[in-house]
Image 1 (cartoon, rainbow over the protein chains, first blue to last red):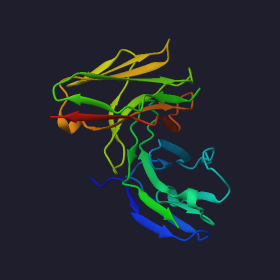
Image 2 (cartoon, each protein chain N blue to C red; image 1 turned 135 degrees about the horizontal axis):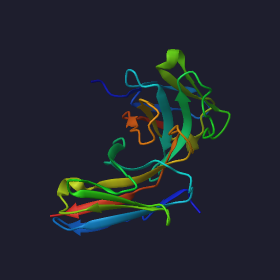
Image 3 (spheres, chains in turn purple, brown; image 1 turned 30 degrees about the horizontal axis):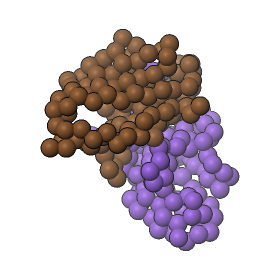
Length: 116
Length: 113
């Protein structure tokens, strides 16, 4: 079946511009996560959506970052007034969230963001 | 102390070698443990979950030591295709929901002919 998809695959923008990154989770997965990975670094958790519950935004690095999930499916991560340090690969993952502790997260291919 | 800590490597081993990676975590309340694999410029993919009793999947064996808060991954008979970065992953939230995962920075493995 279809996996997690993300768009665009690459994005080059100028400092100060806003960008929107999109994630389509696996159909039926109620949990959706955003991470970012800077060059040579580990994955950094950004935000987590679970069904209709309030999202866990504890990982968002600043108020320039926001995310929403419409209809419990597609999610958009928005970065306002981009800075060069925002350059990274932004990864989206989804999971079934069946309530099991050992639940696999499936990752999309990521969006490579470069802020000039 | 970092939430999840791994030796970054690289581990350069010949084909057929046995190699072991360790990982330590700081949150004693963590309940979910995984090893993910990430190939260069690709997304992470689950390699295996780690259970308290230890588990094996072919050439791969994972162990969990809750008392010492470390996780290990053993790869036997290394193949060239095993070359990748191995990410140790632990959940942050305690309780019935997995919540978000904390990823280590990864250990790079390079298997040479």
